[in-house]
Amino acid sequence: MSRPLLAEFLGTMFLLIGVVGSGIMGETLAGGNTAIALLGNSIATGAILYVLITLFGPISGAHFNPAVTLAFMLRGEIAVPKAAAFFAVQVVGGLIGVWLTHAMFEMPILQTSTHGRTGSAQWLSEIIATFGLLCVIFGGLRYKPQAIPALVGLYITGAYWFTSSTSFANPAVTIARAFSDTFAGIYPGDVAMFILMQLFGAGLAVIVARTLFVQD
Image (cartoon, rainbow, N blue to C red; front, side):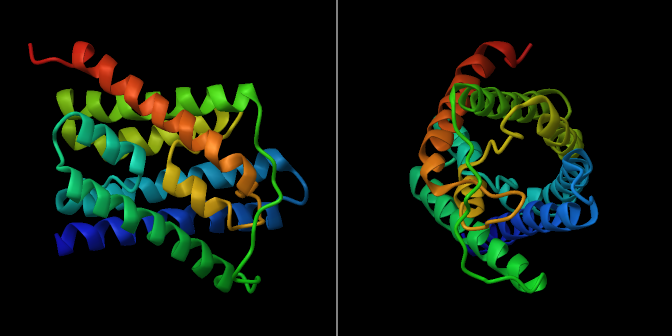
């Protein structure tokens, strides 16, 4: 268990460094142009996902996401104790990634976000974003496993733009971003509904994948 847990910890940590760090850099350099800041944020996130999944996929499966781990648990592909350990290191890794990013940019380490993200449109976006992510993963595993890093990286890059929530699609990322009052942040009071919608989307994807991605 030690190697997979370390891989999940480091992968989620670097994912948050990528998400929050590129958000800070993008906002700083964009001169108030939110579209440019989001472009930088999305490209950096997709790129780091490609790298992290390529490196850590053979060790842990490169979940970096409790919704992904839950989906594999529901499919009977990961045992409950291992899934619980993954959940823990993903959340801790995400928080440490946020704090390290603050330190790199000479910001206060401990923060809470004031960036409100709520409402039915954003909740629906999180269902769709997470459902799509899991379908990409399950479909990729069925038909082209070697393409998973590119598929996930490209999907998330696109989903930043075609969802009103900018596609969190990850409970560990959502929790961690609540502790960063930066471009990527989310107000802590909005976290619970985001996570609930993400888990619903993941569960829905498990059901659909049983029919869609069957062995021929």
